[in-house]
Image 1 (cartoon, one colour):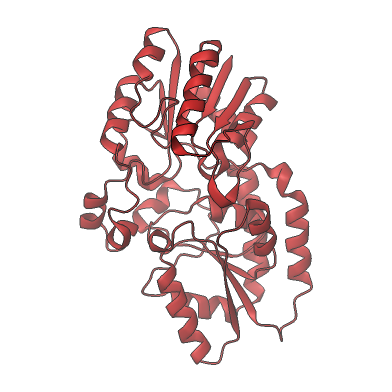
Image 2 (cartoon, rainbow, N blue to C red):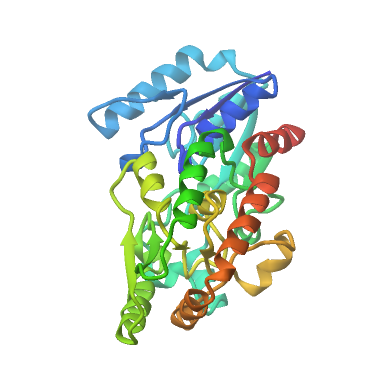
Length: 339
């Protein structure tokens, strides 16, 4: 079976899943756009000087090589001929399988989210990041999708008949980083400032301003805190910087944890992230994330900072959790079952 992943590589998932599927005997390949400063890897990353150049490169590859593949896994509501999804009728007519993997702003209904939930990223950024082809992508998934996946449970309500496919993580690449993170934790002195890491792909949707205000309030109380905003760095450099953190904050508005939380749990870090109450039952019961909202992030941070003995426990639980539920090979195997 030959599967093509792309062209978006959100959180590096296209590249990671293609690699994992090859380990399971599938002839999988990822052909993707570049991913900005994070520079996520893929089997092939398009190099061009302009958006038009990217589109032309993808179209050439698709028209020349697309016929070789049996199935296409598409990410973030985009196909190899762009957000218009014009190639899907041709793929269906020629007997190809089509799989969608939605990841957030590509399908989230901002108006509905704002109306239904007390906290939401949409209320603070709408409509900056909403995909302009959201409705078209959902219609295409319903019409052409042989399997439709979402990466987080908050998206299930927006995508009919979708399946929750957890964010995949290549644990092989995290071995040395995990060792470094655990060494840092063991070598920490109680006299050092508490280092809190936060890596917002976008500050508005991650609730960064609420975290900054909370840290300023705690500093005013005399707590020694260093807030590290990890932005504009390559993926490897970002992970190295986060390996030296004591506590990590993912997001405070969305209600479900993202790829960053998965990576930080894999490093053995205690992770704070807003988990919406109505979504808890959709996660495994042993989820080790500490939940916080914009209203109580200062209190949650204060409690965790004062209870250092809890850090190591949360770290160990996070490693076990990621190994069990986010290992890329296990996630790839689950995707193949739906293929």
